[in-house]
Image (cartoon, rainbow, N blue to C red):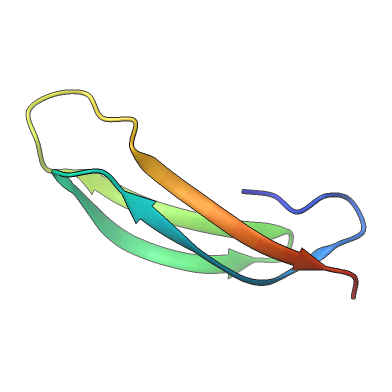
Amino acid sequence: MECPAGLVPIGGGGDVSPDVLLNASAPTPTGWRVRATNKGFSDRDGVFALAVCAAP
């Protein structure tokens, strides 16, 4: 998830659906990144990232 132009991440997090393992959740210079692994047998699209952004 990217912050709008001119803002920087000051916090954030992530969540995943069942059968998905959350591997990492961390800030980037311009937003928040979540990494996950599908541990199930079907396609999953349940990986969510949230960035809390503010003016520097």
